Image (cartoon, rainbow, N blue to C red; front, side):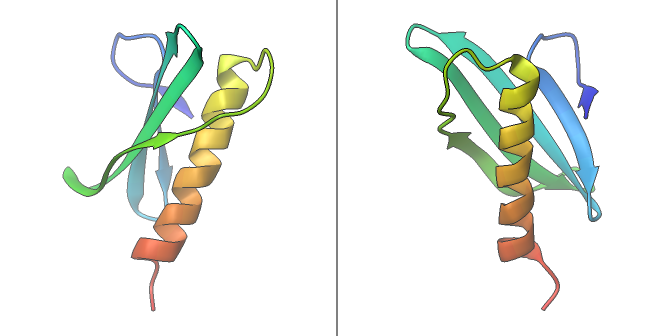
Length: 81
């Protein structure tokens, strides 16, 4: 997981030939986290909101949970055969 851009809460990670982007933001009722999946600059899975449950999670833990969700989506929706 690497920081992406200059905004706090923006990260990316390569996975099986895709690039997973994650954005987090703090809101009134906790944390919102989104991900999308790119391949060669083309959007393969557009932004999806991930509900992250848990009290007082660190940003890193939130991002790890979102990356897990994104990897499952890549495997299920974009996987080979």
